[in-house]
Image (cartoon, rainbow, N blue to C red; front, side, top):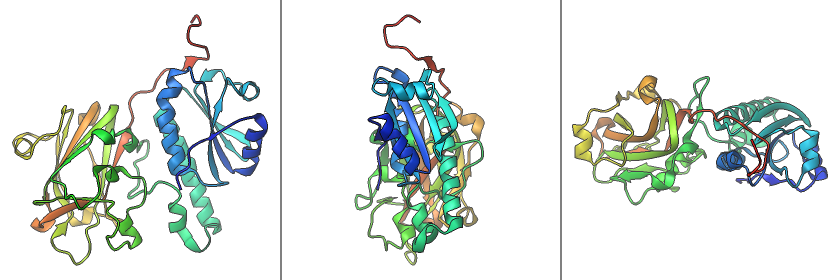
Length: 327
C-alpha cells in the first residue's frame, strides 16, 4: 500500500530505521525553507510509489527539531537528500532538483528489485509480486531521462468524448500496473475509452515548463472485442491555453503527427513514441488527439500514459539560513 515518508522524531528513531531498512532516503528540510516546500510533493509521490518495507524507506528530518542529526551529517544547505545503503551514505542531492532526485532513487529502486528477483526473495509471487511494490513500467525509459508524469496537473486535465462508464482521466497517469495485465477481466475501470466514435482529445497541463523526449501509451482493448481498438493516428499540440474542440484540432497543423503500426506495441500493450525533441523543449501544456483508432473500430481505449523527459530546469541551492537573515 502507498506509504508516506516517515517523520523522524529523534536520532535513535533514525538510527533504528538505518539498521532495519536496506536503503533509506532522508529529506533534511525546514518548514521555513521555500525550495523544501516546492519539492515536497515530488518526494511524497516517490515515497508513495516506491516504499518497500524493510528494503526502501523514505524519511523526513526536520533540521530544527533534529539538530544533532543535522550536525552529524554536516547539512549545510536545504533541502539536502541523503541516500543510505546498509547505514552508510552513498549519494547526496542538494537543492530542489526533482529530476536528479527522481533519477537516482528510481535507479536504486530498480537495482534493488533486480537483486531481489535474482536472489528469489520475492517468494511464490515471483517478479509480478515484486513489481507491484514499485511504479509499473510499460516500456524502457531512454537513458538520461526520467518519467515526469508526476508533473501533470491532473485536476486540470480534460478529456473530450470519454465514455462515462470508464475511469476518470486521472487513471491515465496512475503509477500502478493496469488491471488488464492482471487478468482483471475488465471489471476494474482503470482506463479511458471513447464514447461516440474512435476519437479522444486529451488536454494535459504541467506544473511548470518541461522538456518532453518520449511519449509512452499503453492500450489494452479486451480480446475478442472488435468494436474497441488501440489508437492508430495521433496528433500532438503544445502550449495551448486550453483544450481544443475536434473541428479545431482537425484544422490545425500538429506539432507532431504519429501513425502507429501493430508492431509498435510491445507485449505489455505499450507504444514507445519518440518525439521531435527540439520542438518539445519548452512545453507547458500538451494536447493528445487520437484522430483514429485501429481498423476503424467504434471506440478507442487508453490505459496509461507516461511522459518521459526533463522536469524543468535545475534550481540553485540556497544557503542554510532562516527567512529574514542577511544573505
